[in-house]
Image (cartoon, rainbow over all chains, first blue to last red; front, top):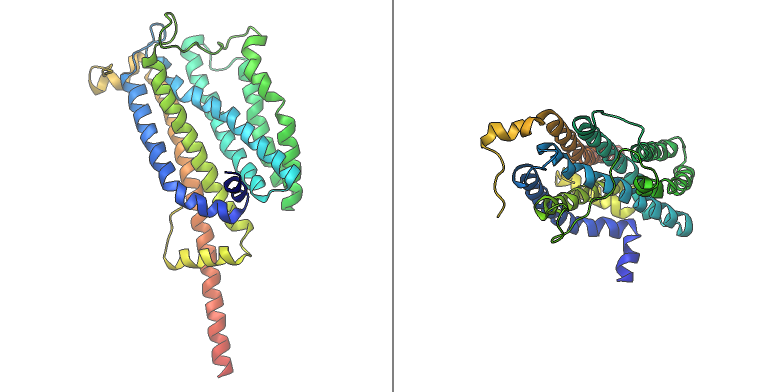
Length: 254
Length: 70
């Protein structure tokens, strides 16, 4: 187990392992996505107050979890890079910033189009919405700060520090709905039995969509990391051999 | 077994009157998914083309060297 984990820190092993793992991840992700979409959009019963409008939940909540979870992952990678100088950790941290930022934007966008018909406005400076907007700015800031440096290692150091400072925003997002009584609702109760909570017919498809979006996030991070490995390790023999082989085979797939 | 909640395609697309809000959210979702999966492939294709160009350049140089020597 530890050896497996340790090996993932080496770009070459990361590349080889993900080559074997990617087809499975594609398969599982698209299976979950199709089941989740069909179930959530067509078969889950309408909400008794919001009607069919609530179906936005199936992308809004998963994208919110990924925006936050992705940031936690990016921060762990930044810390690992700063403490142990693990090359692979910095590669993953670098590619996570734009991907996490996109999911954060998706969360804000879908929330805005859910807010209009239910709250009567696309945007309001509510505690949770504002702190999520700040998360998006931090994602953009981390990516921008890194690209502002000419040297890869200075950029990595600066981006790692900003990433770790940005962690302070995460508990603010998490507890914003409890600390301040503004518009955004707090987390719903999910139960199989208790009355007055959301029925399983509504939240089970949300689990499918949640894992599907997590799969898409992972796919994006892995695919981008593989490209980044090829760029950073291009002087090594194994990358040269791999590129030679792929060019000769005319392989254009990721 | 859950049942289909709409009367036909027209009713499904109407989303109980919330068509605009629901579908624009799902459209943005589709764009995010597509971009996240397609962008790395474009990037990889570029890397392979760069490498291909270098391989051809090196092959050309080697040929030149061989003809010069002979």
